[in-house]
Length: 281
Image: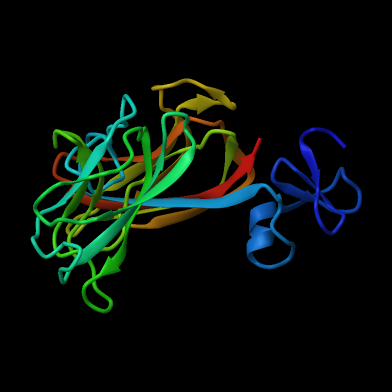
């Protein structure tokens, strides 16, 4: 058995994200994670964890933007480990308010190790994180609300302590940030085996191009250089892309979804998601 092959619990062999049954030279075209999700096999690798993100951007015109709902067209990754602050535009988003009360952030520290922290909101007053070594934000969501089936009363922003850069954004009326970005944790390799995208405009028909990009090429990291891993187009439509051969993403590499439309006044709404798993190295 080669280094790229792994024995599954049922005696079959997984190679490069594809199940090999019986004769190891014949590959089942259904990827391992898809087989696992529909219950055909157990979880493919004992040291792996499922991962997914999704993003959204409105008013997409003929300049490339990242799929997230923050205040800037391009998502800004933190340059150095730091403490952050979280603040809302509503006084009702407090630890005893009627809106969002507590928010959890999923982050990578200065060693790119995965961490989480739950923060009590203070409404219009920024609340500082306990962690002072936050280097990447991989997710943000509400964990407790003041009303049943509730959500945030205002726009919630995770920022640098000066309030000048936003690293995650959760709009009013929601309880989970739609940021189409993530970074692979230390000690893991990420495998993307599924992604999807859709676009639409309220008036007229405008073509949108959505790119799956990462700071790597053929598993070799290139920090700061976002290279296209896959790409799809849409004209008031959507696509579901299953990858029989998963795209490997090395540890510490950044991944994001970006979009561009065909006209200055296209005002397209674009959504996308990425699914896969992280396998421990």
